[in-house]
Image 1 (cartoon, rainbow, N blue to C red):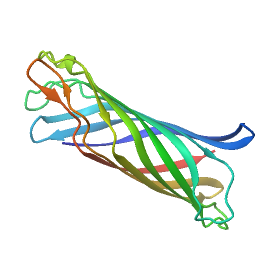
Image 2 (tube, rainbow, N blue to C red; image 1 turned 180 degrees about the vertical axis):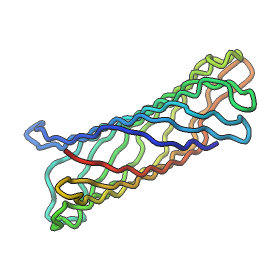
Image 3 (cartoon, rainbow, N blue to C red; image 1 turned 120 degrees about the vertical axis):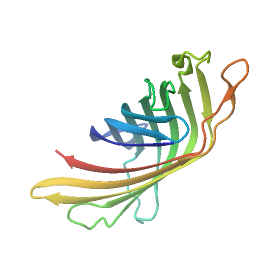
Length: 204
């Protein structure tokens, strides 16, 4: 299957102090419309999606730009697949919550527009909730656990006249989940999935 689309959102960064350590806090929320395509299930256009991200890491930069700043990240994604596909298949809502261990590198710090940011993250655990009961086919809602996943991104800042902007490319790969009983005779799991995202940010 394939899900592709565009979204619009808000991002923010701030700083705080915890246990006498400076922390950098990042957050974002993105909402959009996507198209679902599957040779098995059929197509659904205009499905709604909302994703969020909260990232905490040390605000203290190391003297060596190649020493990463450790952090923790939480991501969520809600996808509304309700409706009937072009092949007559019934859809349902899906919700994912994942926690990641991250490392961030700020390189090219001498650039006037800001440092290029590299980030890599290892999935600690993901929980994929599928509301299969919404299909009306006798399934129960299930929660699958994901334990293998990697995420990487690169973000480069630049100037648009007097405005600060950035462009970020992110890729993510998550392994197959566990197997959960979805009905008296069937089981459900989340297959291996991959995602790519290109984000343009205009900072205020």
